[in-house]
Image 1 (cartoon, rainbow, N blue to C red):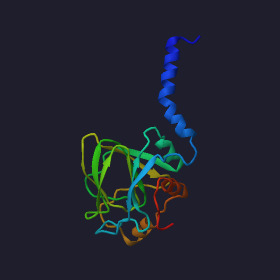
Image 2: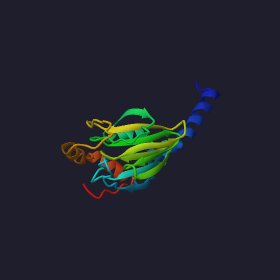
Image 3: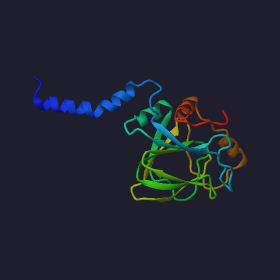
Image 4: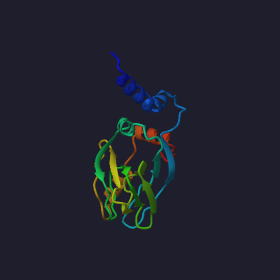
Length: 193
């Protein structure tokens, strides 16, 4: 038997989830869950190699109810840690990373000491290709990111120049077709394949 209490609970739940159902039912021309804030290429800088063929990309997650984790997992990404990135400069030599800001605000330096500073806030995503310098410059106490990496890519923390052979492996680190398709759907334009 449907009581008044159950009816009100169902009505409230339906009203709260209706925007989600509309979004899921929309065709491919519906609103994108992401806004491309900016993308740029970083040149090698001192001991930081940066990636020669993939851009650094800053996205903003525009729809709060979009199932981001499932989308990343379908594209072959796995969350491997969460917290604040290191305050000292570093890079990953053979793994791309996607920082998903889950709380607070912060500023990250990308591309090395003379690279670009990026203002991040909750809902932002920052894609850093393998070899890209990164450093947390400042953050409020609540600032947290989830670090997502492609399957089968092993992340390391490098704080000095790579050997010639390691640099060749780093610059050859590619982006899977599924990841490339996902990022292009978010508005990224790649200069190389």
